[in-house]
Length: 321
Image (cartoon, rainbow, N blue to C red; front, side, top):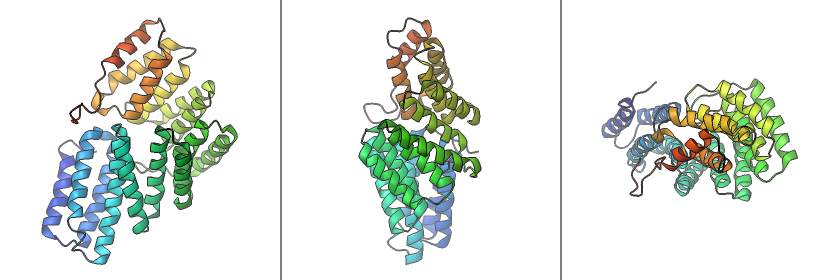
């Protein structure tokens, strides 16, 4: 667990370590690794805009010592800067800054290559596939996913790349047989894989979310609803993972049960403050709003009004809401 005051304290510790050893040191590399772990494990506990500022500040501090550091120390710092860049890419994506996300993730991948950090290459490639999917660039999404799979270790990491990156691409292209093959392989992996927490980890709740969304994209609404319920059951309540699965369930129900679907979305809006509502959740809410447009049920009317007045994650002047 971390607190709002504990978050900037991590950056301050890095700052002190840099002041103590401006040419870098093994201790600074270890501290940078600990900072990455802290940010990744506590990713969902802070509003994305707040966490982005802290991660960027830490990355900036580390960049000042690379030139003067010895080769081994510089390599270690660059590796952690790569992971920090991966976090920045994901945070930018959750703030609906897709071009910024692409820039940070491209750097993360490049640093993974230059430091021979295969898990970073794999994860950054999966995240780049996610960004490409969001802009409906299916060819680049497939290439990023497949490149990530080439570098992903067997087991959980492979299951993650299959479910998170390759499956949504096949589903969007309506390549149902390939999508079903990916579901079968990744489900088999997840049956025995040891789950990992945090932003760079992967668990049953997230995997079932991606499978549910694939079924939704392929218009298998009953199956999507069934799997979304599994994701909800596996996710801690009132977390971003819970909100995502709840909204996927609402999308699956919208055609046959508009009142229930709208009620689920209203429940998410009641429990998740706007500053913590990720761009992915906002996109699902917008899709649900379009599906329910014209519905006469009271909950759908209320949802439309709530969505109309929902503050954007970033204001016109560039400040966080």
